[in-house]
Length: 259
Image 1 (cartoon, rainbow, N blue to C red):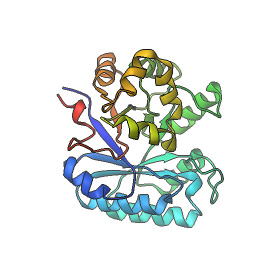
Image 2 (tube, rainbow, N blue to C red):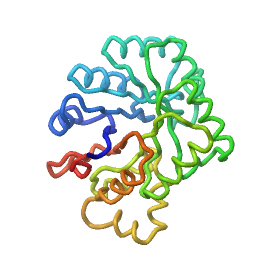
Image 3 (cartoon, rainbow, N blue to C red):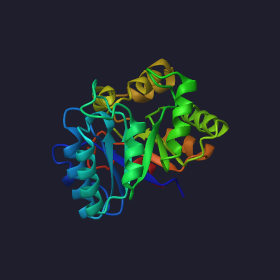
Image 4 (cartoon, rainbow, N blue to C red):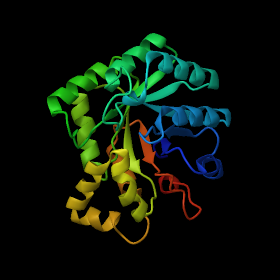
């Protein structure tokens, strides 16, 4: 029996139809919040999917929230829709639209509002602007407010396994979900990786000869070896599957994860 899996999607296009076609109700589906569509579309899609029977987990990007009033409105709408989990990130916007420049203040505000379990991001290959000691300190603060963490997408089971060991050694004790790509067409993987903040992981793959052949093969990227490596090593709560909305060729992005 493999690890449980959740699937990350991006708002836009016919994504609701794609989700209904490929993922059974009850599946945990997380919804990104990118700068070009903002939080409104994410919140709306989360409510729609929750109404269709999915466990929707919207991403709330701190820098996209314009005000405390807007945050309270989003929280009320999500609560009314039955959403109970939120993934809180800083976001890719260069400047904050309101009072939340980073994820920690937003998590603090959500804790005061109450009614949600919050997840936060973890970085197996480091963060581009935050040094490792400071990053560890932030994770320790976030776990006081959050219930789980998701790693940035990574192509190496060894890196992921080493990372979760280091987290435990640093007293980060929350459940951690391993961020892995789904069965994504390699052209789509390369085109979209940087847009959702996984550029460093892609560069890691490009530095590794065997991974380079796997990721840049003419067909779709097959995450099965990576998934087996993560499952064998243990230490993770489950798999967070970055789908890139690539449900192509009639296969859901989690099909390689099934036994």
